[in-house]
Length: 153
Image (cartoon, rainbow, N blue to C red; front, side, top):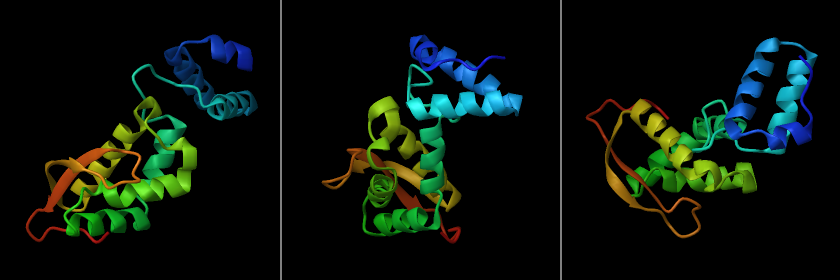
């Protein structure tokens, strides 16, 4: 396999880029590593509808949201009657900067990951609510603790 050029990658559909990235990642050699690094550095979409779970930004959001700091902030937000995302959104902004946003359904994907974390911690979704001023996301799920099954954040 020959590594694609930036021009070739930009000419591809998002789905074609994703396929090239997936194949390159499986190669486990220098050409594969160079190809994955180039695709990731271009920050081009890898799917038409948003981010796939393999997208570098999605993975970065997962890492941030599953951190002890973000889990604690999510629980504290819920304890104040806010959506869990109210505690996590500022952390995503601080850590990811402009890479975190609505582009490629970034805030929606972040909300989905927060939902996974909250269910893991023993919470149940009860509705949706607005987020405070300054958050990138505008609305998010609200949560309540199920019985005494809370997992330590």
